[in-house]
Image (cartoon, rainbow, N blue to C red; front, side, top):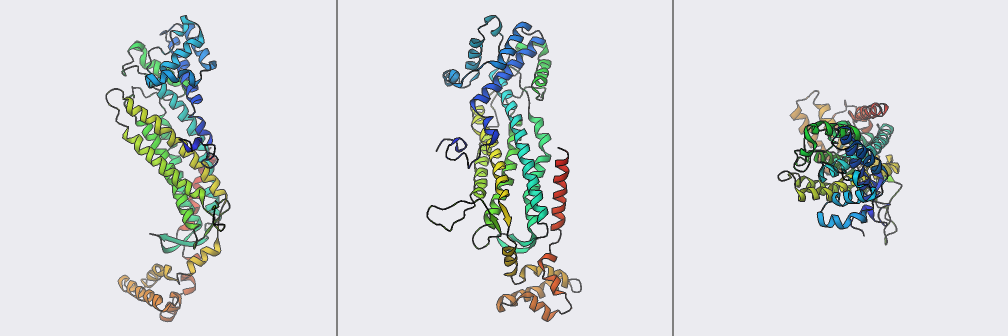
Length: 445
């Protein structure tokens, strides 16, 4: 087993990596860092901070130079960061000392690394949004198809009231739709960083603010209009959004795992796992994996949050902690989204099993509806007391509650009252509202 399960040749087809994982490879990081160095030189040349001829040469070289991670590994071991080694390798590759001397002019390593990471996060979120939209469409289709399919709602693991399978599916989808609504706000955290060694941008002179603004424009990032070396809010807010996504996906995994368990079997999974010794087993492996990924991501998010307070103007230990946790959170979210889509593709409800679960309660799950029916003509406390007594009699005698109600209250329409499909309340409306919200969302894309 490798250090990261997402990199394992054995496990990576199960813990799907997705395209987001490639953005956190060494090659992608180096490419992002070079892109930032090239854009910085271009903007500085336009402002006359460095010679324009040098700016053009650096910008051109940054787009085509190939630097291998091994070339800067020794320097990174010594310095704790890759930028000094990267700058040296970049200068050597240009073989033009008169131009390459202006590489990395006035910036600090954190400026380049934070900005490069923001470029990769932006690309990752484009991938994540597409996966999220695909999942929402699948959830809306599944919910809409089964908006009126009665099933047993469970609270505290106990049978409660009738609901519909479609309504259960909407409970999976709404948090994801809410998260999608917040995406535009989250993208406001993709900032450029350019404020020099101690946040004062001294080498950039009086044009420092405008240079930062122009660099943001060049890289299509946002200008925070300040230094944020010790303010890790952008990463924390981004990671918190990802945490929300993974929690919502774990809810799907938890519910499907329980609905597919022996003795319930109200959903069927076409893609299940096998046991090495028990031929009868059909394990909901993907559902369990969604829960496991959430466990990992929440742990990483907790660690990231603890690193939030960067001491003084910059803090190495807190910064290094971000490197160890943020990629795990992003890749975990991407993997979970892809896995959830695959899980839903093989999911189908089992109406007969759902009907059996409803029937075996002998009508007791409709005791609330009975109480409200009686309360139309009786004081509510009296109605509740009557229903409680009937429920106790049903349990003691093993008689269906409907039979006892027909005996004592013949004026009540027991066929309607004890038909779960007639007691779904707002469940079908909830489904319709969710489906319409998803359709509106996707029509705008």
